[in-house]
Length: 238
Image 1 (cartoon, rainbow, N blue to C red):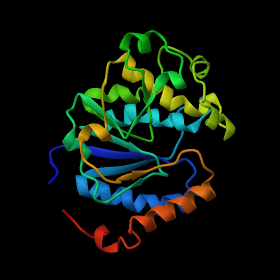
Image 2 (image 1 turned 180 degrees about the vertical axis):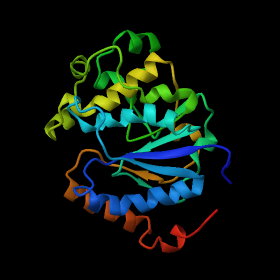
Image 3 (image 1 turned 180 degrees about the horizontal axis):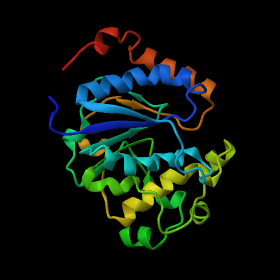
């Protein structure tokens, strides 16, 4: 049973609701089931606050202010095109408040220039920002840049070969860079799915495919996970 005293919010980013409707029709019911299961609010970011950023994904940094306005104990971000299984446990119950969570992490030197914060930290953690969790103690994970310009940040980002083939430019990875740098800058402790010692397929996400192809893949995952009928579970209240 979740702790009703703790304030939790699941955030997602959807700035083009009409364009992504086929995707969110699949993913949002699962987000809301999970939110109900862990006693969290569901909050959709739909407006830009950082129009100077080339990539709208930088809007994930809105959580830094939103989380404080909402007075959350825990902040969960999930990309709108990700799937979360209804059986997923409450990950906030498995973390300490001085730890942040990612489903997995990358090796930061693959994509990012190591400035003094990365070098001082030495862990070379690259944030996979499609799923991340931080408490009010570690809200700096989501903090937007305040000591360099966006253009300076873009110059420190080098997409890997496969991403370049798919048309990615450096600005498309801006939030991964910022969150990775924040982990190093603030010395945030990071836990991943493997560290929590539970097994199974609880999340699915593929970040580099066209909407039409991704919609097909999402439907296939729903079929493979036998989640075609969620009505009973949607009405289940804890």
